[in-house]
Length: 324
Image (cartoon, rainbow, N blue to C red; front, side, top):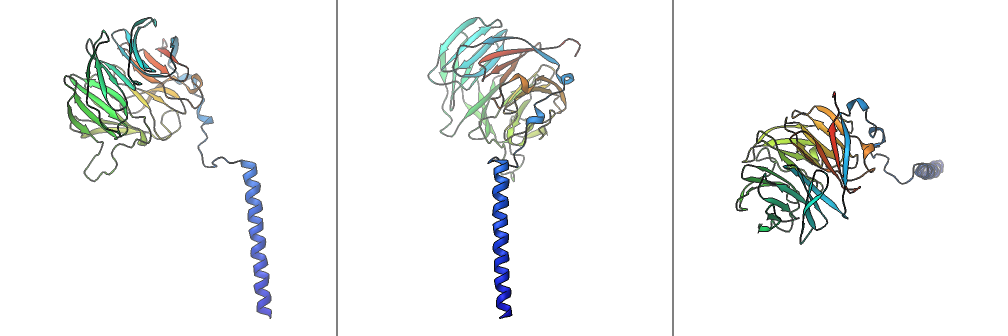
């Protein structure tokens, strides 16, 4: 009888504890709402020390389009891909050429004095400087998502976020010369980590290929046959690093070898040394739409930075402040 009373008491005690847990859970949930309590609060990182900002926005070019997508600088001209066309404008924004396209352009690259390469989602088309279509290369397949173009001599490097690799093409005939998978060894199972279609690359003035591995927040230097030479990475929401699932989203390289980077969500443009150290900030988050898209970026030989603000539909031009 005594043992039965103990069991009854323990049952009531367990029930009471369960009720208390439910009440506490509901009370806490109502106070905190339905948000993720473990989500990173980016608010403290939106403010940047003015001493780090070495650039100023000198002017901008408003664009008449619904969806700006890509930008490239060559020979005092800007090549812009938007909606279903590409256009060439001078540095004052005056249109020199506009060419309608069958689909939305994803990337654009103009070889100095030569061909204009337009990347669509799965294939590349080639135009001359007068806007005449000269070639269409063989599509890469249904899973392809082309997100970046870079060139060295007669080789065009193509970033394919869908297949998580870099395709190496002959620019002369569009034939594939090789594939870089980002695997450092035969045992490496993942190679490039590309959670979303943000996967960029660039070639510096020494002809070295640098690839952003966005899932690792790293910059990786590869040989043509896919061997990793060197790399650096910085995963941090602080100004010297990169955060989120896939940053930086865009990369350009200045004539001195420094990296210009563009980030999404916590939108900002920065400059890093090739070894990774932060040099300066070009544009802080306050310049952009909150939680916006990463601006595509391109640079002139003189170091002027042209940022394609996708949310505000304009080209923003940044020049270095005197004395910095």
